[in-house]
Each structure stands twice: as structure tokens, then as C-alpha cells.
Image (tube, rainbow, N blue to C red; front, top):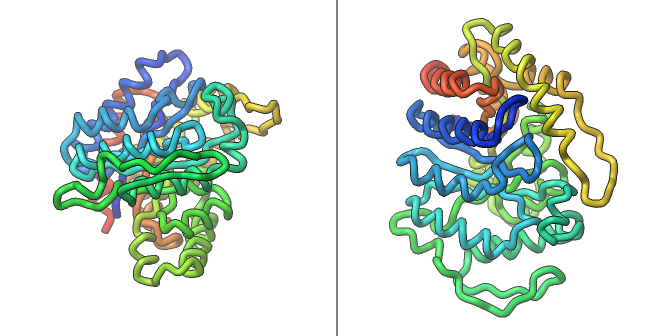
Length: 344
């Protein structure tokens, strides 16, 4: 199994932006020291739910500060970015890091971000497949042009070419965040592994991986190719370790609801539509039931159960649920020292 951390740079009540970002950076550095596989960076705008507005920028910093660990975006929000600009940045990090960068992309939400960045609601509701197509052609080709409703430009050269990485993968690993059958089908059609959210349980994730496999085969991918791509699926979750499970649960139930309420309430839709947000206490309790929250033995068993039920053997785990720097660092170190050895 490949176990990594999922970093939101969450701003807990009473904290400033710099404190949240410092904790995010330190948790990534400690993840490498602890022997974890990867660090996945979230991206948000204008809300304390996450204080990192550019996952790919933070990824560049962390790739420069580390030597072994894989660094990915979870996700770069494609509707508010030009696919060519994002593709150029991804290729640059792919080559400069020796192939340690993963580009995770997603559709985001109907937030005010679309207004601020002049993308428009169409970028979210209609044009995501077109933008994804341009991005993937950029990462896989040598010259790219576009003549679609949203993107229209003459053919230009791809510089730098991702496939010029010496002794490395021909392009940055790319994963697609999937929250609906529509996005699952899009990932399957393009031959992309999925990133599945921490709000989903094992049964939901199993249904999505099964749908992805059917759609990938229907799109003409061979069974061997489907199996190879499926090995890259990622399951997001929460990890909090303690000597006794009730103590781990208590840590999250005390800290996370305040952050979740403030962070989720701050989301503003671009068109005024009403969005129902989760009850923060009930959501925290749900996450504790679904994910590796408890003793190291329980955490390993839950990860193994998810792998058995879904076929996913790659994890991105939120480790900053305590909201505190020292506790987050200890949580990451225990994940590496006490949980990884129990996984086979």
C-alpha cells in the first residue's frame, strides 16, 4: 500500500493564515522523514477551510524542500485556470523534480471564484470536459491548438516537453477528482485514475471503481491497461492516532467542528444558489467512523478493509485534524512508524 498525507492548510479558530501554512509545510516535511509515500495539497480561495490558493505553487516549494516523497495537487481547480498554463507548470515540475509530481485536477464548485477569476459559471457547468481535453493533449503531445467553444488558439509548441525527462515517465502522473457518475465516466474515457473524497465510505467508493472499470473497458482500453491505471486510484480520508481509540476520536470532535463550520459557511456561490452544508459535528463523527481514527492497529485494519472492498491501495489522509502543529507532527510520525509496518 502507498500511504500519504492530505494537506488543506486548514485555518482553525484563533489561528492566522501563516500558522496554517507553516503547519502544512512542516507536516509535508515530516511525512518524508516518516517514510510516507506522498503529500497531496488542496486548493481553496477566500475561505478559512483551506488557506492554500495555489496547490501547484505549494507543490513546487515542497518538491524543492524534499528529495524522495511524491507531491501532488488534490486538486488544482481547472475551471479557474487556463489548461495550457496549468500544463506548462505541471511539465516544469515533472521534469525539475525528476518525476515526483502528480497533477490532480477537479471541477471545484459553483463558488465566487468563478466570478473573481472571470471564468464564468459555464467553466464549471459546461466547459470542464473541453478544458480537461486541452490539458491532457498538452501533457501528451508536442504541438497543441484548440478550436472549441471555450478555448480557441493557433497551434503552438509544447515547451518544456514532459516526455524529455531522462529515464522517467513520459508525462506527469495525472488523476481526476470524481464525485459523480459523470466525472467517473470522464476519467475512464481519458484513462485517468480517480481521486475519491473523504466524505465517501467504502461501499460508495467500490461502486465508483466498478463503474470506472466498466466505462474504461467500454472506451476501448485493454484489460491490462485498465488494471495498470486502476492501480493509481487514490482514496482520501482522515487519520488520527492515539493509544486508545476514544482519545483519537475526542481529539477530532473537539477541534474539527469549529474549523468546518467556519470554513464551510464561508463558501459563497457565484449565482446566489443555496447550498446545504453538512452539520460539522455529525460530519466529524462520520469521518471518525469511516477512516483510520484510533489505535495504530485499528488504523491499519481500516486501511486494509478499504483496500479489500474497493481495490484502492493508495491513500491521502488528512493528518491536521487536531489543528495543532506539534500534534500534527506526532500524528504523521506515528502513521509512519506504527501503521505502515502493519500494512502489507
